[in-house]
Image (cartoon, rainbow, N blue to C red):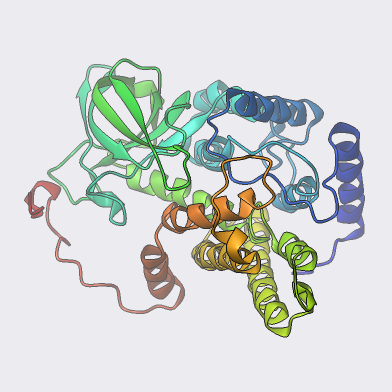
Length: 413
């Protein structure tokens, strides 16, 4: 693939930058973009909604979606170019990752025309916040071991169970819900994929206070929750393949932040240039330069791997195991970058700031949030398994539950 803009892409980039310059202020030199948010400030959520609505109105949202569903009918390359340009401006944190990044692509791949018309346009305009209800206390790395059950009752499903680590579930309007509908077949074959109204009776989302001080992860209890069968994506018992679409798009979204996420290498360089010891700016220290260069090289590797994914997707090829590579490297890289930033600040790096105006807040928050980013969307161990088996062709791990019906699998409970 050609990593330089074609004339058409250069024109598109100029148009995108011109529009952004007319809408929002650019970041100052060395200024970091907004850090990852726990969205506990209602005003921040409303700013995120307003920004998404403004983009949709002007045709800069959901680039690859068909126009009839609120998209632009464009290419994944255009989406990447706009994201690169958008990162240069003071935009609010994005609360629509689960919706536009996961629910939308899953609906486009598996939804009926009626389902697409029902959800996608509002999603593109920022009218819906979505969450993912996959992981459970006994089903994280082994997602297919989930036990939240749904029983058919006429035209509805009745759901009982518990989900865990569900980002923004306490704010969400809709949830992507994976449930077990048949325990008498293999664990991957008895799953069904539902879209659940998070305001339904029987849903109790309880935020979990995290080491960052925020609480955007939730445990979600579902008790007798009724979901219309019209909200089912894919076939009954076919939920695993639908879930894989969601997961691959989730990893693509997370790995695509290969510039270092909200805090990139440019911000790290600016920090090193602005921080001094008795010899002068730390950017003049060989060891610091070497560490930053290592981050730069890794970030470029992630970016180019993500572009490879985007190129494949622009040709109609679904995300493959390369998204696992990008997500694996990006997660560890961000954690190392945050640790380096705290080291550069010496004793100030050990201070956990509560003042949002503190200069070092994005870095200490990023450092504390980094382990969660390495777990969400697939742990490092899960991603290594995928890379080993699907990309390198290595023998699969021994699986003692292979060939067993789900209810026959020992649980230790």
